[in-house]
Image (cartoon, rainbow, N blue to C red; front, side, top):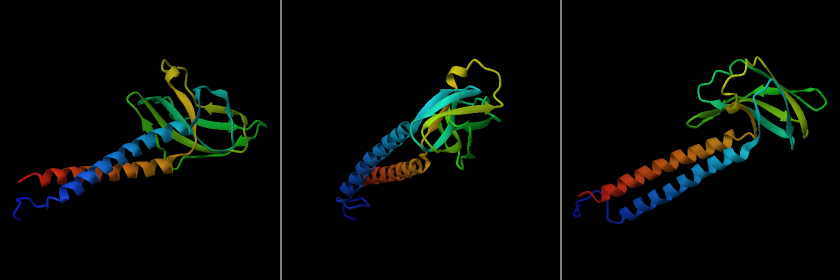
Length: 177
């Protein structure tokens, strides 16, 4: 090795290019997952024992709870969604309870419903305790299912960040003598 490095001088460009491409890919994946979560939100209603919710289209929806971090107000609640004709809409527990959290709030998926037709539905919550001071920050959120696409974005973020770090390290190693 006459040049004093493990890698050939031409490898610097390959490692640097892969690091740059991976960084751009990581940026697109992060932006994509944030946009996906924002676009999946259908409606949000305050936390009450009885209320009406309007769905503009039929299909699957996910009932999520949103509130301050570490709140116990949502524990042991039962949810019932009734169609405009008064019949109960069947729902099932979410298989993977996806959680999204920020610095002060968290959102957790609980139940999945299939809305048969657009219209005004009645949501009732049994077991809700007395109002607290944080009621204005607690809400029920209905979202379109997005877990599979979110997982794909997360895998893309992990892979591109690994390629970025590897490319950056090998690029720097090319300059070490």
